[in-house]
Structure formats: C-alpha cells, structure tokens
Amino acid sequence: MQNLYQNILQAKKNCQKLLAILIDPEKVSIEKAIVLSNKIKESPATHIFVGGSTFSGTHLDELISVIKTITQLPVLIFPGHPYQISNAADGILFLSLLSGRNPEYLIEHHINSVEVLERSDLEIIPTGYLLIDGGIETAVQRVSQTQPIDRNNMELVYKTAKAGEFLGKKLIYLEAGSGANQHVSLEMIRFVSQNIQIPLIVGGGIRTIGMIKAVQNAGADLVVIGTAFEKDTNFFDYD
Ligand code: 1GP
Image (tube, rainbow, N blue to C red):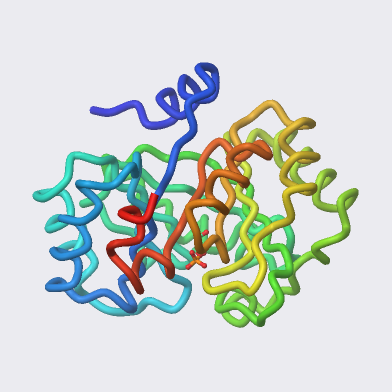
C-alpha cells in the first residue's frame, strides 16, 4: 500500500514540487481516458486527480481502473458527494469546503461517506478546501451554493487555511475553480504558504507551463491542472 500523504510531506521537505493532472469524469469517456493516460505517462505529472463537482455517471470505477492500467501514478479522488467515491483509486482528498458555510460540505456528506469509506482501502487525507474567486461562477460554487472568498482578501484566506490546519487538516487546497479566468494570485499563495506548516495545493485557471512554475515558485507544493491539458494533450511538449 502506498503512503500517499507521507510522500507528499517528504516531497515538501525535499523542496520537490508536485504536479497533478485532473481528469473530470463528467467530461472524459473511457476512450478519452486511455488517450490522456498515455500522454500523462510522458508528462512531468506526479499524481492524477479524478473528480468533478457535477459528476453523476456510473463509469468512475472503470475510468480509474483504465488509468491505473496505463500509468503507475497515484490516483486521488476528491469527491463532492459520497456517490463520487471509488475504491479503484489509491486515496481520497476528504474535503471540507472551509470557504463556505454550507453544512453539507462541511460535515453532512462526510457522515454519509463513512460506510463506504470504512469498506474501502482508500488512504483518507483530510483536506481544507478553499474556493477563491477566479473571475467566473464555478461549478463548485453552483453545486455547493457557497460564495468564493474575494481574491484580494488575504487575511480571510490565511485565517481560514490556518484554522483548517488547527482543526487537523493535512493539506490546504486553494481552488479558483476549473476554467477560472484567473488563478489564485501569487501574492496569496506566497502569504498562505509562508504561514502554514502543511502542504499547499493550488488549482484552477492554470493554463501554461510558465503559470505552473510561477505558482510553484510562489509556494504551492502541488499544482493541479485540468482544462489546459484536456484541451491540448501536447501541453507539456512546449516546454
Ligand atoms: C483543480 O479545478 C482545478 O483544482 C482544475 O482547474 O481545469 O482550470 O485547470 P482547471
């Protein structure tokens, strides 16, 4: 069994930056997953994330199994609902939407996930998830019926992330939302990463290799890209 969290911590300790490619099961068929996985194998990705706020289909287990037959990379799911949990993955970012005040996304879905998680072999990684305004109304916002935090509100984002750390979250995830116009600002990433001890994930609206590097240099330990790679699987060839 892999020790996903320990590996993330170790990478942080060694200043090794991590990169996850997001596969949204809502948009990706099994056929497309095969193409994407083969491309991911040649890319610098260190993790594969599988998730999407609106997914309600039935091919999740198969999709993850296919990905895992093609790549050796760890697959982490980050479900917005208990029915988006798949035991075919290696681990789960067990998210609390700390930027919002909707009890369903703070505790209710978690309670409803207990039975399925107890039966699974997934490594469970408690994660504080903060939605930051990225200039568009995102699916997370719509589905969770919560508002993102203003992208300039450093203090609130920092205090929310820090409260998450005090609550025992093992990761903080700053999310501008898939397809965001603007990723989380470098200033905010710098401020949060300098003031928390746990690893920081940043995703949403990161569209170029230059942006990946800038976000990593600002302090993100793990960067997530979805749309840019999905639209152009040659994304990493332009380095
Ligand atoms: C993962 O939602 C992001 O955090 C993915 O965003 O699709 O904009 O890369 P993009």
